[in-house]
Length: 290
Image 1 (cartoon, rainbow, N blue to C red):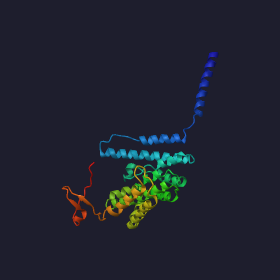
Image 2 (tube, rainbow, N blue to C red):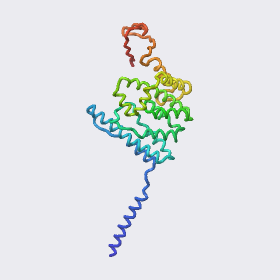
Image 3 (tube, rainbow, N blue to C red):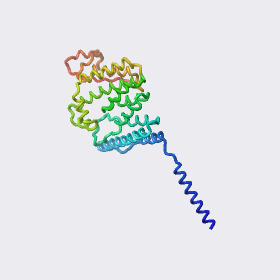
Image 4 (cartoon, helix red, strand yellow):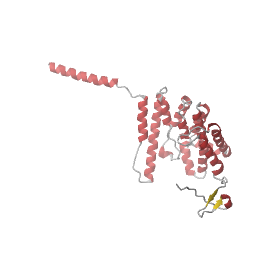
């Protein structure tokens, strides 16, 4: 009898310890949740690509996977607004910048970035970490990117962040103009842009005065040179260097502009000027020997 009672006590004690251990197990911290999501984001879906169809399917899986994780990053920041990890989570939620207009039915909708930018602007607009976000979205097309860049330039107190925001806004506006030119004669691109970014937004952009839009982009490049020339751009020189180069390209190398006169040496070693061939069709092939 004693054995049975003792065995029962042991069993009950074991169950109590197990239950107690389970109840005392602490949930993962916001930082741990962030690291788990980041690992999932960096790993992502894989697959063997043997055809264009396989490639499109893989692109779709990658975009949809990252969009789902962006929503989880957003939820993490929203549930822990006072935790330092909230800013990192929101920055990660904006990481997926759709620079190529893939069909919306392939890549799906990125519903998290709008709310993520709103929270960044509301709660973290003065952060000294926003420079990397500014640079990343400068290659995008979304309306929210422009709103965010203007807000950072206006309200962020850090000169290096202001400089990167100014350069990024100028590049964003110029890049958007080039994309609008691209879709003028390509209806299929227009449909894809409208699907990704909204028909009303695209229609609004197509109605804008191109000369005024160009002047505004140039003005931000000029401001970047004047006020932020010495600000470092990670792995890419300075804001002044980048702004001057893009400004020169806009004013002298854009489609329809008169090419600047250059001097060089042809394949026979003869010196020439580009202006020598004025009125003729000229193909220039630039290369250098290392």
